[in-house]
Length: 302
Ligand code: HEM
Image 1: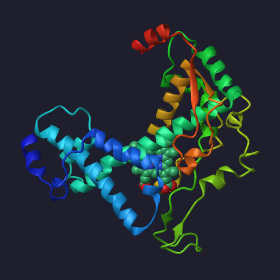
Image 2: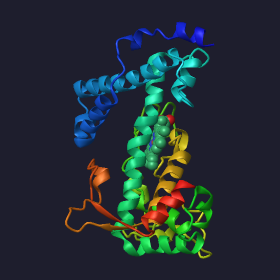
Image 3: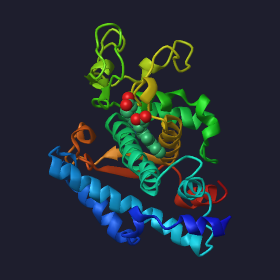
Image 4: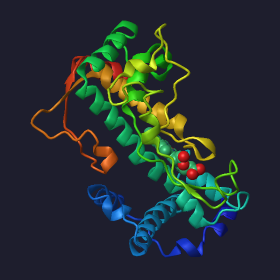
């Protein structure tokens, strides 16, 4: 199998790219995060540059996997390896594989990091709501063992806090491929405003108030008639919403179980920061709810 693979691993599209050092790739990404407008502006020249940067990052990372495979290094479970091994079955070029694998990073790193930070910012900004989550944690889990994803159903307050905290700006633009509902002709670019939907007072009363309780019914369970649109909807809904939800939940869960979060009042707060491309919108102090020795002991056997 590997021998056959080696003959496939001579792509024209990727030969020109040496594996990027991690530090170099990291600097490129940090550079974009520091000033997202560099990446987001829409002139053809800038888009081309953005494409070239992405191509270089993704292709060099794919080349790293290829080199490891060629040297018989065990790369472990790897989407890139799977895609390389099965590229003919799926009719994929190497460049397509590079961008597909890169989409996991592009789609998954910034979004999930921003979502987690937003939840933590909301918990710090609304100490009463943070207190409800921690009271629920103390009652259901206690402080002598760490919670896991299996506890998700018994922790509606945290899920409610997350659903209330996560808001999306406008979704991605879509284009109709055929006439829709007799009034939207094929080829129309349609913008659906997640923001406007999440501000509909008939569905979300007092939409500008932070009210996690709106997601919980009278019996104390999460409502199943109220939906969040943060992942979009329809055919192009975020394909990773389950993994993203779990990542945000488990990370917020462990942090709020172990730490008391407070906003540093000496630092500026920009609560719309993530929507405006400010990736450092506030500064949070973490105080331990459990002694460090106990926390280390618990996490060692987690
Ligand atoms: C909290 C985290 C995330 C949020 C809020 C989020 C949100 C979204 C939204 C709003 C869309 C556009 C849906 C539409 O067009 O209507 C989308 C699409 C997409 N997301 Fe996510 N996402 C998250 C995490 C991820 C992760 C972890 C991955 C990959 C590992 C990912 C991969 C994608 C991809 C590939 C698409 C394009 C789907 C398509 O066009 O068919 N996302 N996401």
